[in-house]
Length: 178
Image 1 (cartoon, one colour):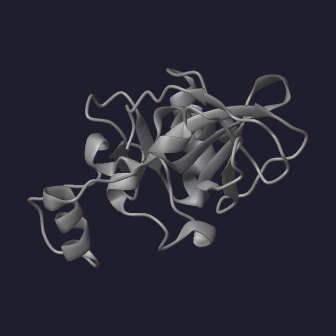
Image 2 (cartoon, helix red, strand yellow):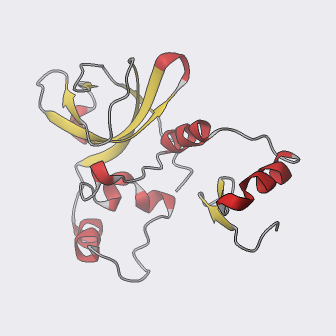
């Protein structure tokens, strides 16, 4: 340990994805110590890895729109039905024990000049009906974007597009990180 005020956060069950939280004043010193043993990647690489693994994080634009199960939190260990009390517990538990979800988190890729925003709606290609909502977006290689969206399960086969008309390509989730 370099400083007592650092926190190590495990982002997966295997302990392979970690976050190190450190006070800003010690940032350069900690990075220097880590760089002697690890290769350092930028925050964009980390954000893309989170998107690829299905680690959806809620922001102001997506607050209060999803149940934890829609985001796959029960698969990653971020949601535990045997621990403590929290806001909305009754609805979340009722969905878990008695309900059936019809919308789930999916990962998509598409090519466009500009990124869509979290909270933006997705439409089904064939009918133009509302199909889902973007949760998270990260830039990828060669001008493409990768995103996480909660979408209706019955719209995946017909295809989806953004408000700007960009067609989405479904990609697999790794489901490794929280």
